[in-house]
Length: 281
Image 1 (tube, helix red, strand yellow):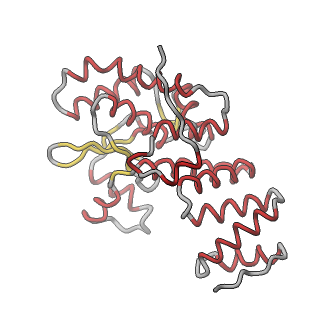
Image 2: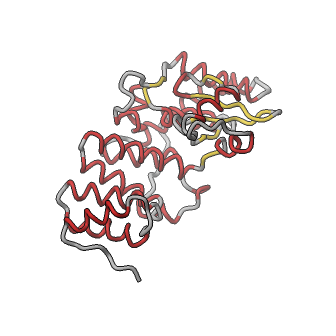
């Protein structure tokens, strides 16, 4: 018998503390925009079934690294969850219902499945908003175990982590302090925001401006202070000829970010719209 799962309301998300923001239900809420008929209870039950299958085995193991190894073996080897290396930018890889149906995903969606199963088994697995590919981390006696869910949950050593980060830090190799900051646990809001940014990027690249605007709008529901999402929604509105919306968003972006590196470019867009540059007060 399927249990009940309640999806949050979009307008309630900004007011929730990070600790109160439900990760899996909100990921399904994002997916419902594209798949309005999805059954949240069915997907929650599927994740629960993965955990239930593992519970007896995991409970007999004494150490977290052994427990997560069992989770990874079941998810990635037995059930066949894996990274979509062939169509990495397929938007289905960012929609949790599709990831659970197809057992294919991108790093962050696979991490979400891995985290949800692990946490239901009492394993404190956290996400890491690592530059490039999203990772997961598990506390161990002498530090932490960092794993790559896009590649079967493979553990990553310090040297590989430094090298992965280096290419996103202007070629600088991060020292211990910088690397520790990069490996901080990502709160639920940051994970969901990254999922929405991925979707916006995919849809903007494809020229699907209605979906790009929706992704930016949903990001603003999660985090109204995200100025880049305000700009992105305005630019998508511009592509859709929703000129009033474009003027509002781009004008507000400039008012809040007069010194932004792209401010002049956005100002030119507003002038093209006949809106003029907003006056600063």
